[in-house]
Length: 232
Image (cartoon, rainbow, N blue to C red; front, top):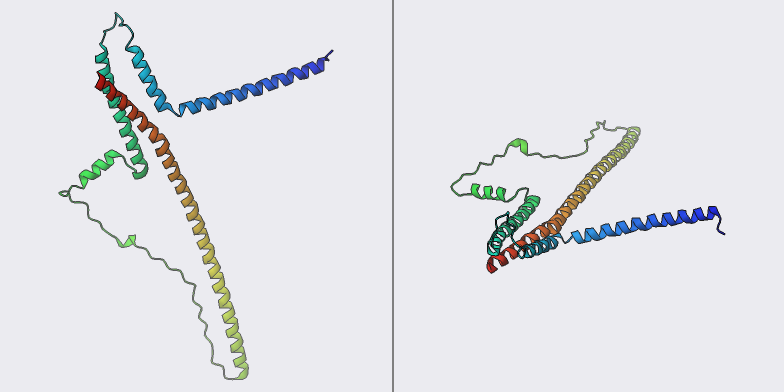
């Protein structure tokens, strides 16, 4: 006979495994749904075609006005071509906005302003816009008396050696400060460059993945719309 405590442990293990299996199945189902939705342009396009083909074989409802299949095909062809063209135009406009900070309307206005008969605004350069910066170490000047005796010559030589050593220390300190400052600037520029490259990479992904799907969906709508227009 199985004891009550062992039976409880077996039941707890079964419930824990069931929850874990249910959680894994939910994650798998979510991944499958995401994978299917990645092809949404083709799925929605196929759904439109299937809905149109089914509706073309349904009988008319007496309470509603009945249109012939040719009239429905012509109307649907017009709307599919219109929506498909607008989607492609919207995708192109979005891509231009990402890289040129302006869409088709901005380019059109620039084209109008570039008309040869329209004079552009003169370009002025003010002195305040020109800057020049230099950095040099502070000069050191030391006055001395011309030595006349051996003792004065010794003190003078010793002072000159001390002066040169101090000047070398100052120059080394100044050089280290300049190196530290340059290192910080290089590090800051490197961080800024990495951020800019990350932004460009994100923009390229948005254009290649997102923009391509919208353009593909628009082209598919235009293709089916053109087919309906030809067969009507």
